[in-house]
Image (cartoon, each protein chain N blue to C red):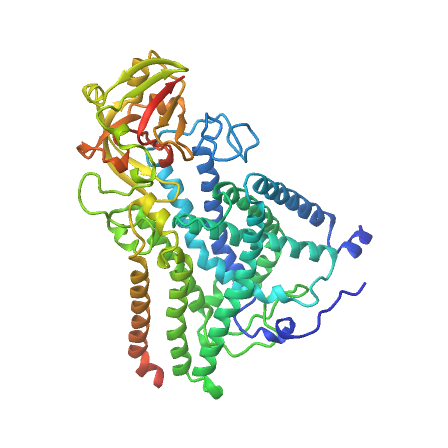
Length: 428
Length: 154
């Protein structure tokens, strides 16, 4: 059966695509840069799902707590050490994701002639491969666009972000694994033909069009124009854009002098001086907690199951043994901030409730609604010597926006699990 | 085997790999559609992102590039000077466009209300910052071009 040919018009004409620097070598070298970033981004993404410990209590953001809710490391507790673990993994997730965008766009620019290849389908195998590319390109654009929009706190999706981003990534990765497997021989052939880095040494006069590869439809031009840009300049520009975006995003993870570079990052901004002037991820005003519930009448309730074991005022908590520790708050959106927290050890509260060796604790916020207002901590977290119900930060009382009267702070705990405006703790 | 290759266009391992990949993708897609209130919005976003890139963003910037090249290299004037002028124009333009694309919700102040409720901050600084970065990119590129001018003219 002869493959069906579309009319040779517009982009379907082989001589429509003129850039002399497109071709399998350029596609390969961009892929080689893109792949490690996507790998780190994917692994840290799954790590974040694990850090939420969806099998505990009401921690699952989607799909309930039973196994089968994604690809999980069930039964393995998220560690408490090192304290910066979640700040690092989630920082890497967002930095690598943002840094991959210019490389992904350059890669799509390189191979776009193949979208219009003619005849469009050469065989069943070729047709299936192209169908898989719809999943790869669509999945990538879906995952990157939802992620980068979400970290800028804009929710135009109309669907729940977390499951869509999570399972969208699996669609992308399934197509990507196939793509890498099928294209590895092309990459090897392109590097053997042109050298891995040799084309980067050519100046404009020596920038020749890629000849393409025998027996493969490639993005190499059929009727190349004269060059106006070297491959070195293209890769330099893409690299600079990627590095610039990475630095901008890193500023909101690492802080210090890098924070000044985070000019376009959503959380790179200083909030002025003062003990409570560091980034917030939910203001008190947004919670709808009535003001009187966080006043002098506030009480902390300690429970075991339905049974009330202790009721404490803030003064009583402040009179107990205090622990102070420098610990980060690390947000799933990829920013983090390390502050000096002071409060009562969670294990101490467990003892007060009559549970000297707790297996875990469910912490409930006074927020009347919203996701994750009740969070369950694992045994390692509740018994850690620096796992605390914080009352003060940097030597001052917590501000309302940071969770006054009391909030949870535990080493390496994802920020959204560091429950603010705590009203009740149920020990197990 | 020969028959398979002739009719399918590749070996059986190829077909097996494609089917495994499709099965995983189909499972993940069905989970995503199950777990959200508006599954049609996911489909729209998935298809829309392909259309937005392949049929809007790419043609748009490619066309701008072709127009710029047409204006600067008009009539086949392909001196080093003119090529450099083109590059000193399109590199800052691409970088500025990339920043706008990546940080669009900040620069355009999208989601201002939720940002305020979450962070207690406004998005109103970002448009100016992006403009400033754009100005610095173009000015830096022009300065570099001026420095290179004499060498290029030779």
